[in-house]
Image (cartoon, rainbow, N blue to C red; front, top):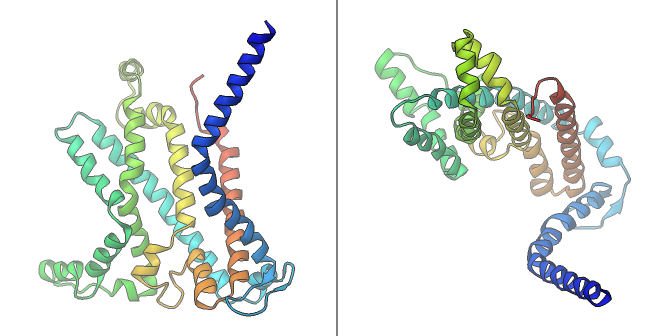
Length: 301
């Protein structure tokens, strides 16, 4: 009995060692490219840390500077908030409508799903460049408007009233297919018996969607909302390439502000502090969403 127990323990140690050996490349990568940079960013945020030159400890001065004397921080934070408030509901709602439409027994729905998913797997830079060319005064949209209706459209990317809207529209188009696939997968898992019973009871059309389908796929909606919110607060490529953060600072989000402070102005300490403020905002909003999910997300037990 003792020999058997020792053999099992030895075998468990061997298996643990083998598992650690297989996992070590991923663990090393996690440590080198995630844990160490995160730890270093915490240290940098409490230092006056120029790209070149002497680095001195300044405590929480970088955080106070962001809130009190950095002129571009509050506009960047506001732009991130505006972008998130516009992008998240539009992306989730349109993806859900699209999934519901393609969930019906229509011909070629598989091909249509692939078509809508193509922008998700297409490189972001390529998508942004195409949209930038179309939105120019000499671009496709203005040309079609003048040809068909005789109307000259405004310069969307140079007009502060339109620039953020165009960034949101391009982003919604880019990410529409991802949430659509999530919702499509959830819709296909719905039990037909429940839907048939709802139809017999008179729940059809919008009432069936609102009262039956949405509560049943609410976990997927919750997941999509969380992920879309996180990505929206981290937006960078779309405004950076479409408008350069302009006109003025009309479309400069917080991540672009962080990038400028670190790599344009060389103030890595201030950039690290802004990054941790963004992290705290994401954690706080995510925590609120998890707390609120009890009121509207329905899980099967």
